[in-house]
Image 1 (cartoon, rainbow, N blue to C red):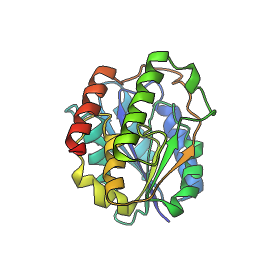
Image 2: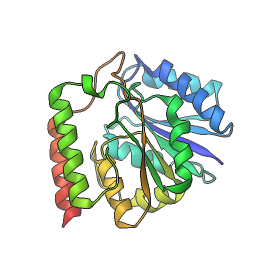
Image 3: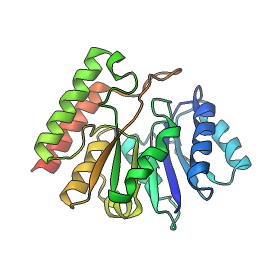
Length: 232
């Protein structure tokens, strides 16, 4: 088994040291032959810190883009950089909302699904403490996407996932999303191809430092355009 992590990062200097250390430890326990690909954007010290880390650990790979890619293009870029021997690909946020130690829980479910979604819609973590408007937007988006496209997941916007290599190779060239709408897009396309999708509960915590990069206006527009594009 070989696992690759694809981690898009945009100005996360305040948390990247802790996240990368915990990610290394979690992946090492699953597969000592892992690789972690960081697709870096932004102008803070994130690139400098990850570059230094990659010199200490050859399993850490860093791709830097001076152009602002957005999450969709950054993930597509990362998917294209994975090792040819990779069997599973993990994606997650680098802001410590997601817990690297729970990757092994998702991996356990990957034996019977092409995509395993780390679902925040559980009693684990701090979802209920998020601002009401954020919970309402997330709930509405999830309900709409599930109903229109019959997606068998309770959390279509979660970015904490495991993909089989087959799923990545099949879907990556079809990606059109520019930003956060990539998460439902991948599930919609996988669903249309009959790929098994399953959920695993995760612990979702508020980021300890730094600021969120999510724009609800841009995300809302992106989700609406995705429904129009793929729902027709």
